[in-house]
Length: 562
Image (tube, rainbow, N blue to C red; front, side):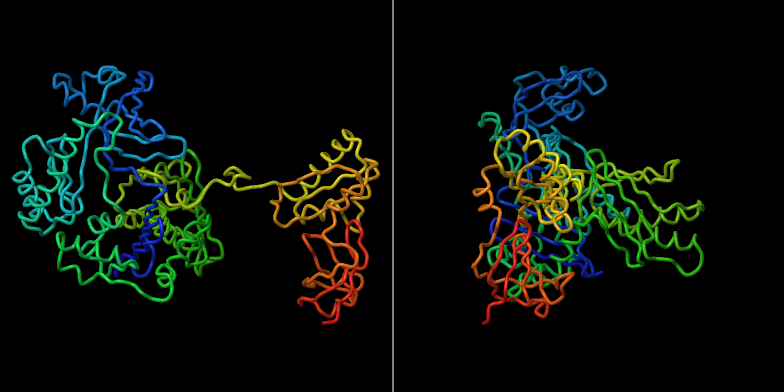
């Protein structure tokens, strides 16, 4: 497997992509306007203690107070008053009181209307180890499989770690010497001493420690020996990476490249298109099947369908092949989109227990490539696969997109016919409420065509009902649900209604032949129809035309010789 890191350092935004065999598997995003807070350490002040929720709200200087659950606050208790253990704590009030100043770390960033979640058990990551200054636990990454290596690293960690302090040995430490691990530990201890000094002098709320920027984190966490190439398009970032590698891994400097091609780096590597596809609700499988990914407040649901795939043998084999392919793709999408929380997967129904086990094994194997912890609970009685994936912040879709202000996240809007009939009712109401003789309806052209009707029949009926002169004007810039109704005297409304005037020369594209007189052509200005005499033979071409007559629903025009 060929693994690459590609970095696009733009103005106010840095993007990083991890590719495996040319396929985008992870995307990182950092913006000046939206700094990530996960991993940051703060000195906070307890604002509210809520026994009913067994939690407290802590002011750490962010827009919304952070949430601290009782189990995550016990380290504060044990650190300040060693006489009470976890088993004796009955209420959050046994741990905290309003006004307390505590040191906390953000474990989960703000999501939607929810504030950040914080803990008092601190951790500071290095390249080879993670320092836990408030814990004395020693652990080794589960990804290191060799038992002898695990014991060696554990012995080194115990030797280099000061008493009362904990260490987690990271995967990158495999094969590293005691000197390299000790150096990493010493650096982290110096960082912790700085945090302690700031905690003693800074008033709450205050930032005591910020995790490093994206470029540093990529070198520290992602630039592993299995990465063949690290490509960046910015001179400053390129030099920074080389300087960091002087300390971390000098031998890996030869794998770092500065991109200077004519195309934007993400476009050159095909990453922009892969990002675009990653934001789509429907994801096609190579076989012709597809998956549908839907997000709700409570969970993410994923539905698997055979689509265009009809198989070659029997139904059971077709279903199995589709589900296996979907399982691999779902694991990839979870990692790429960084989807967390509760996830429900509706695979195509399988009658065979052996087939279900096969799909589950393939899914677990695919999830093994994901560094984020996940837990599969198994199939329910309804045949749905339940799982969870650790959620530490907003997923990529949430960071790149926003909720539609029209549909408010439902993914659906009212149809043109619904809007047209709703507008008709509003026109009747406005006509009854005003003494003005005319009304102008400005709306999307597709809605305007329904309001007007064939040969103006719908508009004529509406005028008869209201006894008012009604003009309809299409506007391409309006959303289909946006409608504006203007009332006034006939002359004033008419001036606003028509986009053209008799004698005016305009440059337009003739879109189609007239349905009843093919010799004439049809053009449109903001949805308003222009009937061009003799324009039928110029369909698809742009021409200058002179407006000859103007009517409420269309205008007549003639070609102007070039």
